[in-house]
Image (cartoon, rainbow, N blue to C red; front, side, top):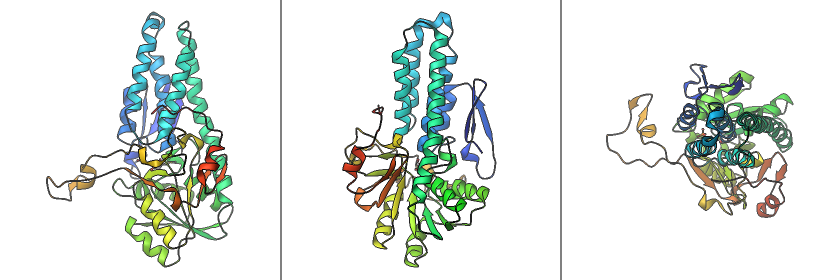
Length: 349
Ligand code: MRU
């Protein structure tokens, strides 16, 4: 199942807010609709947000014709701004938009169709590169796992979050294909339940034996020695190895360290922010209080209660055993290892 596809000048995407009850697709040629889909998490997961945004810029260019040649640049710059404002934490978004900005910068203001072709080709390239990065991460990451292992994962870093087979989940499905995986445990991932709704759905599709737990059960499972490794994705990785990912990742990492369990982060190099020395400056999205005070449309907390709901947290690098990228496995000291990576400096946000 592809979460996102370019079909005849339109973007078709799976509305992930409807899973697992409905597999409902939207098709659009409207970049505002795409920006809204990213905001409301119909399209989500760091790499997929970047891919969708890149297609969004290409779509916006398609609404231009020759008579609008003078307005093309300011119009597309405002589209870049619109897409940049959707979600602040996943750096893949800014990385992909910066690539489109460079295509626009290189345009000689001559042919509109030339610009349209170049923006679409860049979006398709970003998409294809992500498919390949997921494959490499999965093949590299699986080598870290012992035979017959049980893995705990958080949120959804699978095919629904990327252009390909996923990052953390890509390693898991690869381990399953190679006969090395015994079991997967999935955190439900409060408050939006990406683990329960999305990872559990992916595991079911792949027929992988998997058990859903509430987030608070992770400690008990580790104490019972049921977890051989934790693998999570990332939304932004700083150059010292600090990792922003779905809130709750940090607690898992602390628990894993306490129990002597390896804690792995899997992400493409597009998730590494070369301009971010440490994780302390990573912008963390705060979500609407209603995501915490309501469940399934029903109020579960008193009216006017104060809520603090960061969507992500930053796991300090000292809790991370290794970071698996498409360019290899990085171990502490991460500063030295990440510096050697070949990362294009395309992070604008
Ligand atoms: O808020 P979401 O669902 O977009 O958060 C997703 C995550 O935190 C993922 O772990 C991360 O983006 C990596 S996806 C390969």
